[in-house]
Image (cartoon, rainbow, N blue to C red; front, side):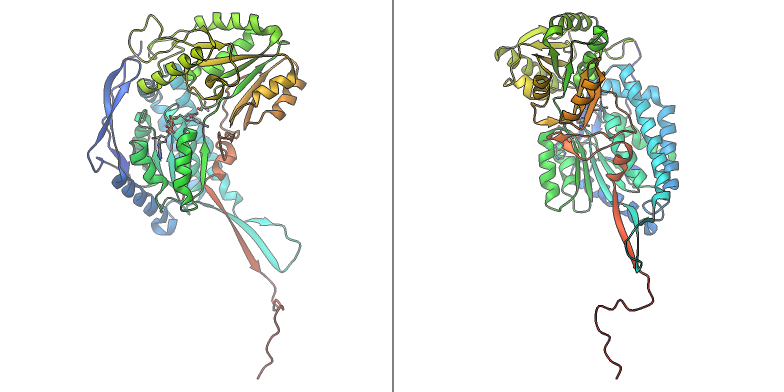
Length: 506
Ligand SMILES: NC(=O)c1ccc[n+]([C@@H]2O[C@H](COP(=O)([O-])OP(=O)(O)OC[C@H]3O[C@@H](n4cnc5c(N)ncnc54)[C@H](O)[C@@H]3O)[C@@H](O)[C@H]2O)c1
Ligand SMILES: C[N+](C)(C)CC=O
C-alpha cells in the first residue's frame, strides 16, 4: 500500500502569496477511507473574498493589461505550459493527496492528474492560436464599412467547483479562463481542496504574475456566495449541484452577470440484446456507474436492458460487481474506494433504504462491505424492480448505485431514457450501429456515448441540457466561455455619408 502523503498547512492564495484567513478559521480535512483527521484548510469569509477579487482586478488592469489580459496568447501559453510541466513533475504526490482527500482509488487519481496536465497543455495551444484569430474580418455586402472582430477576456471570473474531481474540475475552468486572459478567483469544495491549494504553490513556483489566479477555500455560503454576488466579478463558472446553481443564478442575476453551469445528471445507458460480447457491455455499465464510486456528474446510473438479455446481463453484472476490489484507496489494485464524506455516505444509504421501502429490490450490495469496519465505504449496488415514480429512478444519488429497468421496444427505451429532468449524458450499446446513431440523435442530452460510457476528451464539448445546466466546457467551447466578442467597424469612404443635408455655406 502507498504511504499516505504529508499534508501541507496552507493559507489562502491571494495576490501571489499566502495569507491566513481574516477571521483565522480553519476546516478539518478528514480522510474518508480512515475517518482520521489529517490536516486542515483555511475557511475564507467575505473579507478574504474582497481581497482576492481586488487582487484579481488589479492583475487584470495592471500596466493597461499589458502584463496579462492584453498580453499575447503566446505569452500566456508559456505560463500554462509551465503549470502543466510542474503538475507532471509532482504527479505522484498530487495523486496521493487527492486520494486521501476524496477517497478515490489511487490509480484513478493518477489518471486525473494526467488529465489535469493535458488540459493545461491543450489550453496553452488554444491561447497561442487565439492571437491568429484576432481582427478576423467580417464579410459585408457594402464597401463603405469594414468590420473585424476582437476576442477579449471577459474580466475577473469566479470559478466555483465541486469535490468529485477536485483538481480536474478546477482545471476545466482555470486553464481556459487564463488562456483567454481573464484573471480568476477559484473556490474549490470545502470537502476536497488540498490539490487546488497545491495549484497555488505551483503558480508561485512558475512565477505566474501576482493576482492572476487566487484560490480561496471555505464553505459555500461564506466563501462561494460572496464571489457570486460580487460587483467586480464579471462572470461565474459553476460546477456543482442543481440546487446550489439556483442560488448562484439568483445572485448573479442582480447584476446581469453571465453564468455557465455544469450540474448533475441521471443519465441512461440503453443496452440491446444484439451485443455479441455481453461482458464488454457489462464492463461499460460498471465503468458508467462505479468509477469514482459513482460520484460522477455523467454517471450512467439508469440502466435500461432489453427484455431478452436482461436476466443474463444482470447475472453477469452481479458476478463482475462481486469481483471489484474494494479497499483503502491507497492499496494497489483498488477499484472502489470510499465515498467522499460521512454526509455523502449517509445520503447514499438513505437513497438505498428509500428504494427498498418504495418496493424496489436490492439485487446486489446496498451496505458497507463486511471486511471494512471503518471509512465511508459502500458496496457497488444494483437495484431492480424499479418504477419511474421512484426516487431512485428520478434523483441523482452520486454514489455506486445503479438502477435497472427492462424495455421491450426501441421506442420504449427512448421514452425511458428521456424520462428525466436532467440532460447531461446518455449511452447506447448495440452491435447495430445504425440503431446507435438513431438513438444518439433523440436522447435529450449534451453528450451521447456509443458502445461505451464516460470517456472524457479535452478536445470535445462537455455540458448538459435541461436541469444539467448550460454552456459548454472543454474544447474551443471552453475558451469561448471566457471571451467577449467585440465588433469594430470603420467608415472608410472619403465622402460624406450623406443622410443629412450639408448646410449651405454662409
Ligand atoms: N456537469 C458536470 O460537469 C459536473 C461535474 C462534477 C460534478 N457535478 C455535480 O456536482 C454535484 C456534486 O458536487 P457538490 O456536492 O460539491 O455540489 P455543491 O453544489 O454542494 O457544491 C459545489 C460548490 O459550490 C459551493 N457552494 C455551495 N453553496 C454555495 C452558495 N450558496 N454560493 C456559492 N457557492 C456555493 C460549494 O462550496 C462547492 O465549492 C453533483 O450534483 C454533480 O453532478 C457536475
Ligand atoms: C467528466 N468527469 C467524469 C471527469 C467529471 C464529472 O463528474
